[in-house]
Length: 269
Image (cartoon, rainbow, N blue to C red; front, top):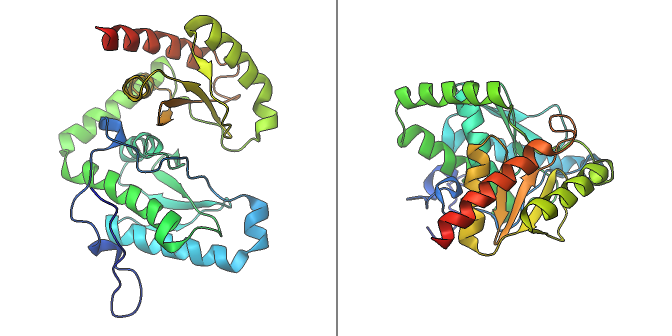
């Protein structure tokens, strides 16, 4: 699917529900991610500097999300986020995984999904990115699955969490706070997999260089299927860093080592 151009209604607003005729495969299914690089929420300082513009961005994202999904969206109590009410906890968790793999920041709490917002978001770029990714993922949830599958997915998430709770990126702390854990994970990853750590640094994420796009896609999907959030930018695989839910990084590193071994054998054969 090529990037859809904006269409405007008679009142001058973007007709968000009229600009897509189809959607490409989800990154979850092996397709290219919607964003080439991670789209992150605005910081408190950025929002305080441009409060009026931030309110405008949030309002437009909420309007677009409601138009394309039928879900209720409003401003989050936390700066930088828009809240979307989902039909179930299973739906919210599935969307969280799918949207993360599209390289758009997201958070989930019970039936509430949160999407990023910032005062520098542009209508034709970042605002459109957020609305497109929720339109794309909700389309697959509502149009490509049945209620029986919703129930099975919800049960699967409960079962997975009983074995090892989902490791999400820590999006609340800063990179300095995460540095000791990041450095410990880097050393362990190098020793156990031989993978080289990528230079780009994101809050809550650690990147490792994969040999090919195919290897990055396969490993990303394996990580998420193992209850560790992951995403990719080209051949760089990003894995979750969270000092609260995985304080030593062992869950994430162990999962990466196992999945990387499977991926290498599968791709080489």
